[in-house]
Length: 327
Image (cartoon, rainbow, N blue to C red):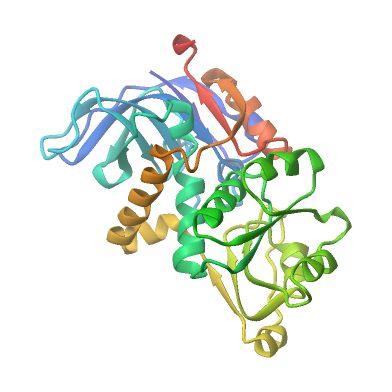
């Protein structure tokens, strides 16, 4: 089979596609033939060597796929060969056959395409965990969602609306914001010229109850200046390139809190909650209440081009890879 290989940390352009033996499942594992692969910002920084997890070299990058089950281990009883599933990896996804433990395999809704499923789990699971467990967002509250045109951001917008919140969404592109608006955001703000004053205006001077921040850096710093009393700030990433430093005097005066969110670690620490979260998300997806927005599609062999549009901030929602044979 073909697999994407990172032989050394560095630019994603150095990734190679090589022949590798197809895996066989252990007793508690499942083999899947992906028909689509989700691309994420973490793939770029992991290959570059700047992510907190540095796999042993060489390694197969990639975190999520969707495909059909080709083989199951002896202990697997509730998944069958031929089932349509989505898988998660840490890493190991960018291969034409993948193997995953049972907790990392989820049966897809019939209404969901492979491409939609490949881009679903990472963004929606993190956003739901951040908004529900992380910030305890309530109906009627106002949430400020940064990077709203990204995979997590668009997921967060849709989830927040399902929870009954008012959404103020930010992005650095008016074109991207138009898509965010179509996903249900109540107010759209281009943050290139700042957003604090506009947020204060939209909340009658109170500030927001919740901040959902995958960007960090200056965006986090400015967010601290437009929060309500008792606000909850949820940190889900640092795509802006700089980790922010929370000013504790602002947190004190506003009786505010900051929480870091990693859905992957939560699923290992509290699998029951992670499973309940995903059950809700899949129900909403089956009902058409939330969906993966895909702006870019590439054949598997064009992995470098796919990571390129992510690195250049060109993606709205998700970018995915597909199998040429499926077209």
